[in-house]
Image 1 (cartoon, one colour):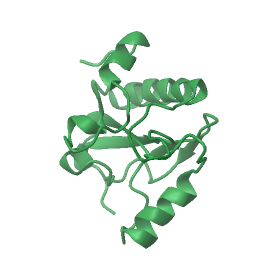
Image 2 (image 1 turned 90 degrees about the vertical axis):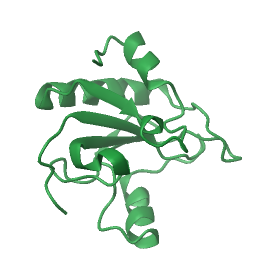
Image 3 (image 1 turned 45 degrees about the vertical axis):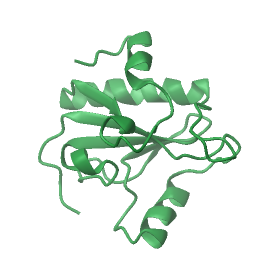
Image 4 (image 1 turned 90 degrees about the horizontal axis):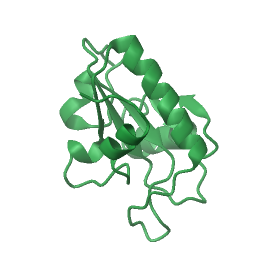
Length: 145
């Protein structure tokens, strides 16, 4: 895995799992490594249903979460984002959004990041993370210029 030479963006994802499926880094890593044949979990961070922040791929390494911007971004995955039928659904809990806000503020300061996007903004086949990221950032006082 190559180190990322530049970090100028954060991409927010969801696991596309129903609300009653409480998984974390280990399950997603299994999907990515065993089932997809990747070298590691694609995301740098995972936010579980109870708001616990788990570390995935080492932060300084290039991610594998949004092909168009992997080389310059950090990927954060929130557990949830679909209903039992597999349709996109914003079913995240307040604890998850609290953790998301905290990690975004930390990473923005650390890397002087100005751009935070949803996966859907670089892959028009996706609605991931199942909520309007720009609107959520605006409503939570997080600048995104």
